[in-house]
Image (cartoon, rainbow, N blue to C red; front, side, top):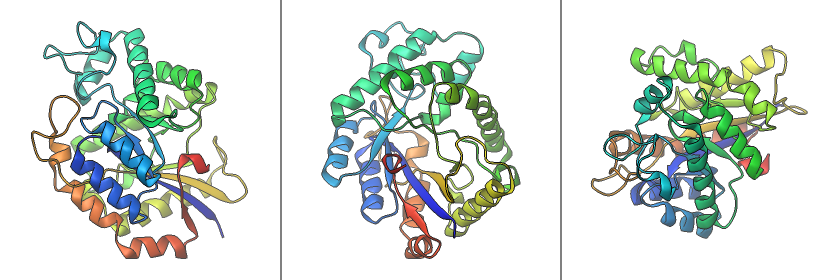
Length: 306
């Protein structure tokens, strides 16, 4: 029987106290096995304390698109900021990048500052580091991101290429267009990360199961489709070893943010205030999901366990 190691990563840890509490509740229920910290989040210090108290495996969710930078010299007069003095936003960052307006040395400066702040908050370097809103796989950024990981010896990241994504007809076209852009960027990032000795799980899931689209059956469909696809083709890097497949399931559970508390400097966004955060939490802690992990020989773990 194929053994599956499943990393269930709760993203945006540190965003607000209610998000932190929801992610911790999921971890204590055995529904989340790993978290990704926004060090510029308004509740990042609290999140780091909670991780220490509950022994939650924690990595870095590098953020260049929402809120304020953590590097002091970049908080004024930086190419990473819009006219209001905040990061450009999920789509604004992509637009500024495509127009050649972003200084990659400032990107590197901010990424390194976030790694250093992570170390200051947690007492250790992140075992894994990914990108908020998938900024880490964008052109140009991917090279700088890989250099930073290699410099700090951070071994693991996320490459958001989801098997079966194209068959998900319940995803609205505008959102699917964004996801397909992320997928294309990710394909173009594989060689860059590989050259820098960076690794990632065999399978990524999390776009088709986000928010209202998360259900026990959708999670299983995504896992089954991904394993079937992996088994049907030649192993590609990173190679599954001796019948073990590693999967990362990206999730965003929490209790919805209540303004003005939360966010990364600008207050909480619609995503964090949405009922969908609670829906994810309630789905992930369902006993039927937990019991299926056991019957299917799926072991929840973190990047440290790979």
